[in-house]
Length: 170
Ligand code: FES
Image (cartoon, rainbow, N blue to C red; front, side):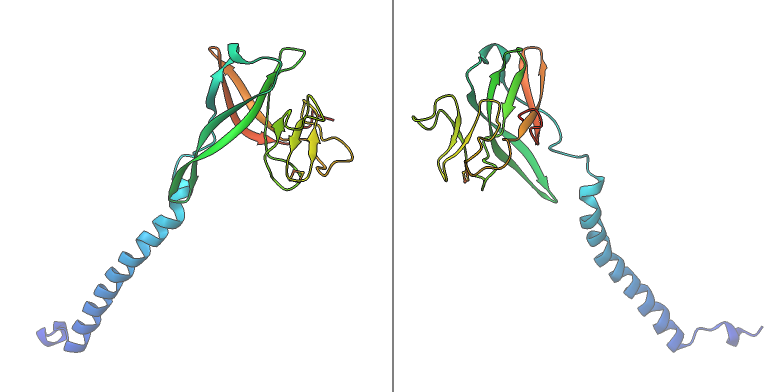
């Protein structure tokens, strides 16, 4: 081979250079996009843990409202979401924590919120009512029981997790 055949033409040089620079720029743009798309998947699941909401010794058979905050992660956005629960001990001594979110249109229910109906949860928006265990009272707008929180007791402290349908209140 002659030395002439090894020489790179101006056209080849420009092709190699532009391909290299273009590839570098494309990688620079695509890497953050890929990271943005995958980061929530790669990150440890947040918000799945239980949150301490109070002491078991303070819980009676009368529903009491407890307010707490849950760490929320939505993609890159992290926040503390305020939550509430109506918490009491049932006849068996089990701790029940009910969501205060009305199953009709999502207003907040209150224990003994209506003077005409004692020992019930009352929704002021459309007069929805629920029994102590969260069961919706027929003839009022809600068509399902109040959701129930996953709960756990450890060292005298009550922890609450996610809500789920209240299958026990039938
Ligand atoms: Fe509760 Fe309608 S939102 S009764």
